[in-house]
Image 1 (cartoon, rainbow, N blue to C red):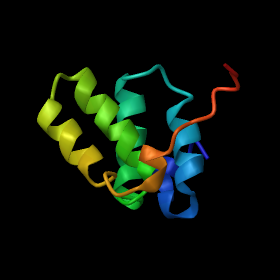
Image 2: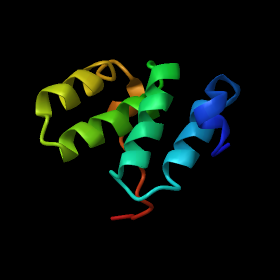
Image 3: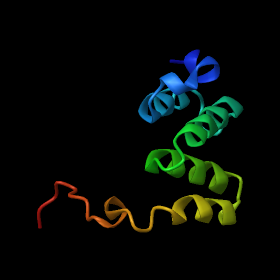
Length: 88
């Protein structure tokens, strides 16, 4: 998968591309490049958008981060309460 992301990215799923992204130090050139490839091939995938937004925030580009995340406003998963496993 590490080689395919650069030579034949169309053969990888977004999950596989993100797994390759995570093999690199966070926000390194290679990390950013792999996340960018995932977004290029899967622009509607929430995980690709979240990674690109995180990279934009790391670069202090809040406008770009907002643009990436704005497409997720109607995604029910963004609004669902997560069960933390704690009981009160």
